[in-house]
Length: 93
Image (cartoon, rainbow, N blue to C red; front, side, top):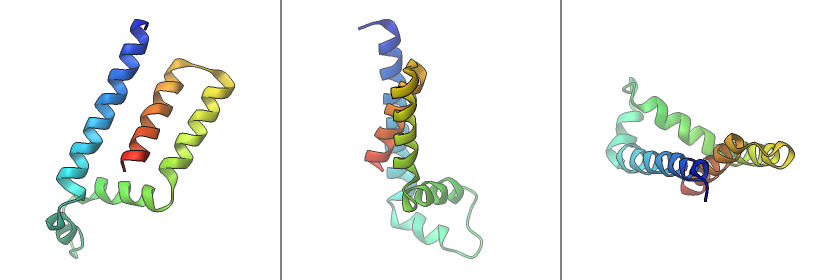
């Protein structure tokens, strides 16, 4: 494997680890669901709401599909790394 491949794998692994930690810390605990359902939720509920909104409207999958189409048509490595990262986020989410 080339050095750029290892860098791409590192980027994907970092993004995936960040999402897993975010889900375990802010999405899955019932305490955060109660806090975010309050009349005046804390600002930390905004990323959680956005992530769940993207999941609700299937935008994770649509974004990954569009990126894969870009990889198929243009074949640029940076687009391929973004497509793999978004696909991993979609599957994990």
